[in-house]
Image 1 (cartoon, rainbow, N blue to C red):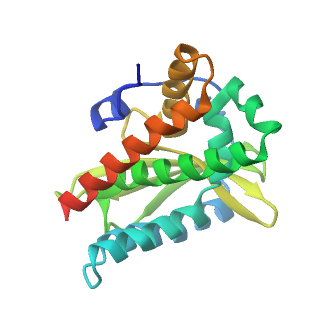
Image 2: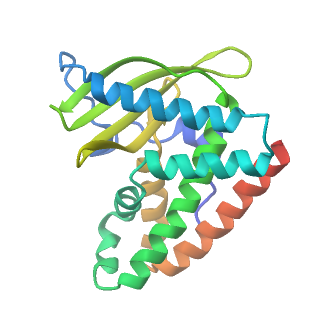
Length: 219
């Protein structure tokens, strides 16, 4: 039995307040201008790539995928989404590499589907909250959909060396965090298949192909 695919409806309605990534930060915590600039610059580049009508649709997607790999810490997100089953990767470097690659392709295809309605939008950062001073920050931004409606997008960023990396994103007023939603789906499937990560990867590849087909159809 496979997990149900992530649809826009389930993404925007599921998973509120689950675990560490979604813990609300203190109301009076300080803003972090450096993290805000990082999100503003990199998110703007990604959305501009999706909305660039001067190049082919395949080139738009390729540029978006490259930017998202730079913007987000995909290996860390991939490890997080496996939860307790991630231990199976520690002693198997080949499996670990395969999982990160498979998950990254799926995650970026999912981001593309969720952000398609905002392609080309300007990114207006409206604030941030430090969860851990100078290291762990939630940046709050607002974008515009194609019909002009404002859409809230939150980004959880973590300092990585001398820079920052995105660990999660939440779209819409409900604040649904994508990595947590994915983890919940993956754990449910792994519980059913006795922790078979390879079987999960097979299902994820099918879902990634479906997301890509829909992306092509939209163009």
